[in-house]
Length: 172
Length: 185
Image (cartoon, rainbow over all chains, first blue to last red; front, side):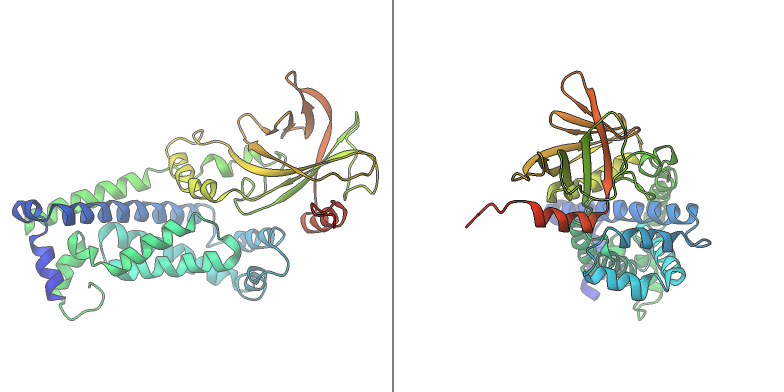
């Protein structure tokens, strides 16, 4: 933790950048990807609110439609039939607010790793629920990257909050 | 520290402004396409979805519930998008947020069975181009008009018949029953 803070302290100083060109590039790429991922979740979350996911049974309709497209003996059909469809209201709330939380967390660098964790949870459920395809692979890789690195300390509110609340797990 | 915080906040506010400026109702869910052939209630044929389409040469649009027992017709078994085509959906989604006419259409493999007088040949694989603007599914020498389900052929796109979507899993079962084995031993 102390090591991380030390790195983060010097990160944006010209001297550190010059002597750690490769690491700086990695940090910048990481932050750009984090921002893009945050924008992705924000657009997805806003889209769900605009499409009345929280106030109508549209998610149930989406799942029922999906059932006709999935192999009848697949695990995804069981997941939808016994979990997602009966609990579609709860799922809609968790997914919509989860996406918005992940978006804000990743964009602002606020509780960044927790936001990445929620993001990963949503992705896993998407995949298990029959919405898997190869486009999820880069998202999983990015999520693991966001979980493994303290990028909120590099750029984000976590940097400031971690100093104010050094014992808190939320801002690490 | 104060300067760093101000820079950070400015940068993050710009990102947020960019994100909220994105139009959320992109082309793929536009209700004007709702009646298009193979366009689902919630958008275009999904990346991992398969579809079975029956096309028959006819002047009349005869409704079919399943693959006929006999006669001549063509069955298109539209496959899932390929691995890299699935990866490309990330870019398609992203660019469509800025320009909803961009990245229209995609390609996917299709198994084509040209059944003649009830005789099923081995399938040939073609690359289908599926698009909304123009509303067609192009399958080599044929294309399907997504507004009228009209089946057209040749360079002049002469209408030759009509196409129908069939129930997926029952149709795949019938195809597997009737198609010849590539290894007849």
